[in-house]
Image 1: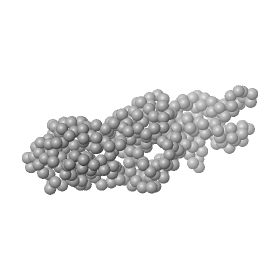
Image 2: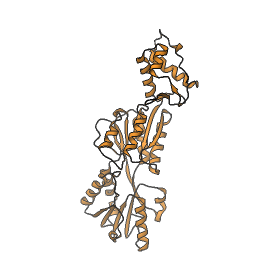
Image 3: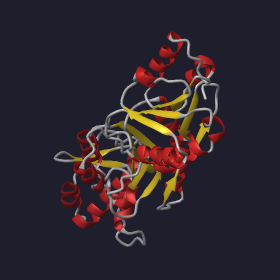
Image 4: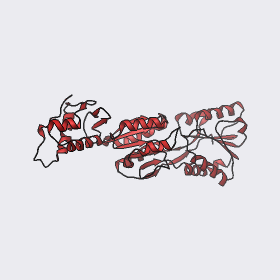
Length: 340
């Protein structure tokens, strides 16, 4: 292991000693003396070997860790965490899964931050335990922790894990956690209002249908507020409605509209209509959640409702760049196509 050259510490300098320590470590990294992944001397080693107070060294290491230049590994020590020690914002972005929609968020988030930040992306795969492990392993190594809080095992434990992140460092994306206390940054969907407003905006087309069937899958990863908004719309606009977890052929009647989240169920509806000579967009209407290229061409075009994933990533990044602590509602829209 290389050693830090503290012969350059100036006792009579106007620059505080902890800043001199920081500058020397940055210089050694820039010059290749310390490389990414290499351990640097511990706080005690540096303090004892070079007769610098432990508090001074600890302050320097803390600042370097906050800047993402070094990281602490519990039980092992401090390690170099970058190739070039530039003062960038360091962000850990933790998403729930890899999908086309999440990639849009990540890409917009990273591109908007640009050269002013360094972003590392991890996947918690809907697991509270995985999120806890990721946060435990990265504690103190990032300026901000951006989390998409969609979990199949969502519970009080999940809220506890998210609460372990200091509120000034926390950014929630896509979904808010209503029981989370404190002021933190968020760019989320307003699920209840979004579904209500977007359906109301399409009444000129929905008036062709008498009944609306919503296939809403089981699982905590789906927000129940969607159902609240849907029920309110159907009540206010006098629609018969049915909420089911899977496609049920017995529900297919003339002048029925389907709203579907999972693509497997979308395929089931289309197959049933073809087999029974039901015309999509006339006998049976279909609205699918979240657009994909295939929905643009599938069966002449499937109507979709969706949040603006690109705008979500951009707005989340701007909260960090502007250092604003706000909760923003993300835009939600409908793309009309022949299936409606």
